[in-house]
Image 1 (cartoon, rainbow, N blue to C red):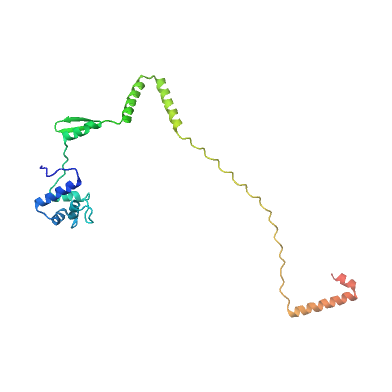
Image 2: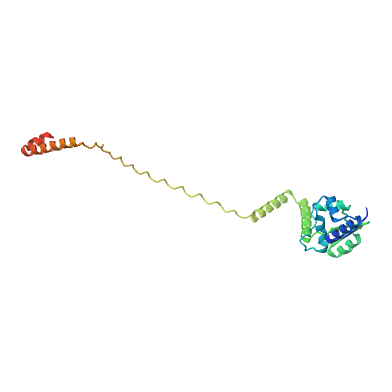
Length: 214
């Protein structure tokens, strides 16, 4: 495998792709057809080199990048620069192990994690030297400390008392409805009027007879 170009910037990748296209004698439209992307797509990607602020300039998408590299006959290659990395990270609190052509960088743990690891090892050593009674007392103390750190839950309020039922009111007896009589006809009214006039006349002449009539 031959290294065609190397770099760490996005512009360097686009420039390498452009140089490879010119080396193969292909146009931007040819790359679109070989990669199976919409027409004019690759031209917009190369516009990032000349005028990144142009409206038609765009970055290569995640799905389009492998298609374009395949059309150009290019592959990714990650190069480890052993001496450069070793010299760069020596002064930043990192341990560097060099072996052959590769460099292995081992980052030191942060102080809080170092103390945690030391405390864990010390605790295991103390646990191994404790008696069963001391271990149980240690566990009880830890449980009590955890309970003390828990937030106190508020007790739920008692439910409100149920409302007392209202006393039943005595129902009034239904009123007696008198039956209504049909209105009298003119003949019946005249006959009744004539009867009343006769009774009044008889009462004037014989009051005792009026009392007996009832």
